Image (cartoon, helix red, strand yellow):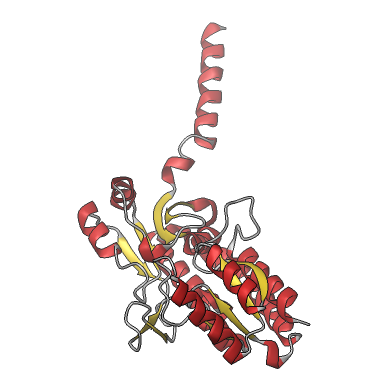
Length: 300
């Protein structure tokens, strides 16, 4: 009897072990360079992937300084997702210092890049890296993420394809929402100033004009001369509203709004998501937040 009980116990333990223990350990270790990209990877990878994000919520990828912990994450990853288009100037050094052998997937492959003025070199143009601000481009990201995951983990092909298809359907619906909301804003009011030039792809896709403060770097505190220049710009170009971004110091735009008479809009999410309890915890939430803010400040 004791032997039978022992055998039964061993069988039960084996069943439990088969059902639960190693799934988390078997997840594909991935790294995404910033929070928006990380959310897209999570939607495609689902429960099959473990996603580490280097530049977290409310943080600026442009000025990020990698840490030894980041090198450890990259070194342990099987696949690394980057935006490309010059966003992560620090990434090559990080990969080299980590001694990483991970496959690197550039999410913007196939995106038609736009140009923007280099805020550090007025008059000089550079590639605009903020391609995710167009939902159509986000769909390209999803396709590249799906293909990258399949290449790294062929056994998960059907899962990645199904997840990507479901998420692409959500993005189709989201694009309809964006176009509908912007379509309700009078054409002459679709002009705003933001704290840095991050919405070029949104403007090109949906018919809005985004103006960044001329000659003012977001990496340094604006001088009184800078503020005066922005106010003059707003009055000259008849800009109806100014907006702040979650990665920038809000005090500049608050002062500009007070002194120019332009309406101050809510917080926009440009280069990073909010924290999980905020209004832009996912890419879809981020885009919905932004169109709500545009509509509230510009529709009338």
